[in-house]
Length: 496
Image 1 (cartoon, rainbow, N blue to C red):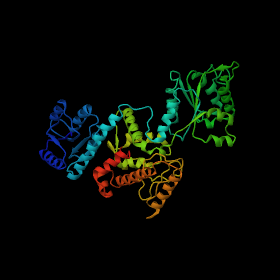
Image 2: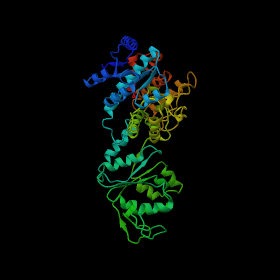
Image 3: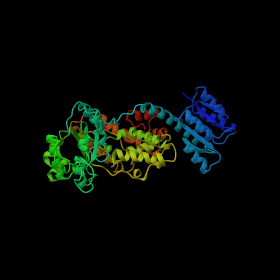
Image 4: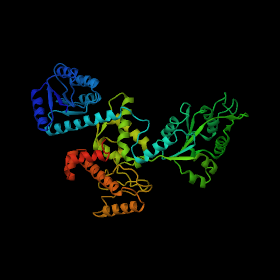
């Protein structure tokens, strides 16, 4: 087990921290200046957590922080100072400090902070190992595994595919994966959002135009079908395509021929078409807004991409990935989510799906005040308890504990909400009984295990929210052991 390193020119501070940490069973190594600490690093030794004074003879703690971060970028560093000014705090956090501890400090609070930093150090080591090879798409939820299996089965096929899913759920990522793992992988991948282009320009975008075909057409232009020749054309939001263009698209899909706008010579393009929509195309067909023959032509293979609320167990992994990517783009150290902050994110419905989660992580990378993101640091949209959702794997957040949301895989196509603990002393029992009856009647497998996991995850996430992420206190309140809650967090996939 690696040591906690303490560097401070004040002997009394070192002595007090050494004794307090030793009582907690934590190994400690002390230094009176940064020079000796850097020498120890050069010898190949390294700490699990570094606690450093900000002002010391022979060099400041901020200078030491910068040098240590060059060698150990993931090391949690706690900066102590008796000079509690804004500049020091800002400089510490800009330098990548884990936390800022003003002197004089409460000793139990300091030990608790070091414990938190120790947990983050262990978590960071696991996250770095997991992120060593980031796949093109992320998802452990059963619904996403179904998508991955479908991509694998289609890897040697040129068949037309229709991807359905809510806005922001990642339909273009699936289309790119289908292209990358197809026989056309060496050809171009061309994407066009048919809803984002005005009707008058969409025809030219798709099929190109000849010089002089209309005002402003000063040169011949190749359309997306020509650009995608030999590869894949991704038509996003196909449900918004105007009816007259639907007719032209159907003709291209039928015989492979098309004309540029203003052109008289037929052109051929060898293109695999992948379409996507967030709309119910069957309903659009019934309304007369979408051609039925085109629908059947596009709907050869359908892939449904689940919304994020149906794959909540993927939120920790996705959040970690987006925080790391934002940090790389900004040129800063990646921030981390506390258990309480992660619990609130897992309990949120994310109407904007993965795109909304990505935007929130980028916002946090810029706006969160410290390296460890607490629940209070989250944007306002996550502070409101989510509205109960009826629908696929919809989960209603308990009224008394908005974070008591179990990350879970959808058990059927119309799973009702989990029990609401704030609805009365026996209401949640009756609700769970109804859920069990529904699952049993539907012939779902492993009902006992599925409901037990959801119930345990709900309890643990609620307790972590109440205790602001302190696991030991959460275990005490639940009446279980520290080892038990740690094991359950790992088993249920709640580890951030």
